[in-house]
Structure formats: C-alpha cells, structure tokens
Length: 217
Image (cartoon, rainbow, N blue to C red; front, top):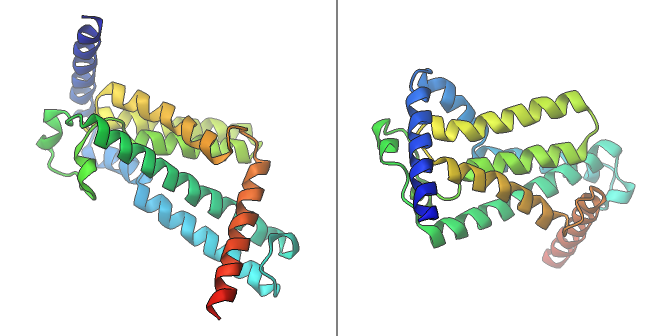
C-alpha cells in the first residue's frame, strides 16, 4: 500500500514537472540533454586521453612518471573519466534491463528522443542523472576551486531535473540516477573516494597499453 502511494505521488509530481517544463522552449532542455549525453562525454574523455598520450610520447617514454605534467594530468583525467563512464553505462544498462520500467507515456509527445540501444526505451534509472552526478563528483574530487564546484553542482542538478521537465523520466528515476553516480565514483576509487587512486588507475592503463603495443610489434 505504501509503495502504491509512493508510485502515485511519483507519477503525479513527475507529470506536473513535465507540464511546467512545457512552458520553457524545448531547445533549452535539449541543450541540457546534450550536455549530459553519454556519447558526447565518452568522446571528450577519448580526446583528452589521446592528447595526454601524445604529450607523453613526445617525451620519448610511455610512463606517467617521466612525462610532462600537462600530459600526465590529461592522461589521469582521460583514463578515469573513460573508466567511470564505462562503469556508469554498465550499471545503468543492467538496472534498466532488470527493472524494465516504461518511460512516461507523455515522453512520446515530442517524438525527439534517440534510442541508441534497446534498454534506452526503459525509464529506471535515469542515465543522464547518473552520468552528471558522477561527472560533478569526479570534478569536485579532482579540484579545489569552490566557486567552480557550485557551478558544476548547479549544472548537474539542472540536467537531472530537466529529465522530468522533458517528460523523459519519473522523479524516482532521477533520484536513483543521482545516487548511482555516487556508486560509480565509489567503484572507480575502490571505495576510498581518494583522488590518488586516479593516478594509480592511469599508470595501470599505461602499463597495459605499453605491454599490448610491445607485443604487437
């Protein structure tokens, strides 16, 4: 009975958010949607990683320890960003496949959603919300500029709530996604939430890549 009441409240609040969101030009929500898109961020992580590796290779070595500081930082960010995004995709995909919760019926009104894989048709949890939650916490763990932290958090929360405003998700999907982003960062840091782990992850990936390259020669 309690779950039934929670479900009805979830659907009611989500519907009201969608109704409110329709008063905002659709392209504004689409901007936030693309800013949290998985393909976009995977591409960003690969570009950052490639730039860092190029910088490292310019020094004639394939180890982070002896490469330039800029290349080292780029590799650390690129490797961990990519690993985190892959973990996020696996978590979200598995939960969507298990839950198989249909998206809100009013999501089809706009007819502007791209389904990349079959599980994208399901609603729980929100992949955008989990992704921006991970990205925000990842960025905060990397840096110390508190003003930037506020802007990052504001962006992440706006992207998350926009999922309801666009009719893509129910509010509980969004809450679950935000929580899942924290789980992703925990997994990436082996539960420590210590940014020093990022360097260890990057060094391990460089060693694996170097070994693979040497075996292919």
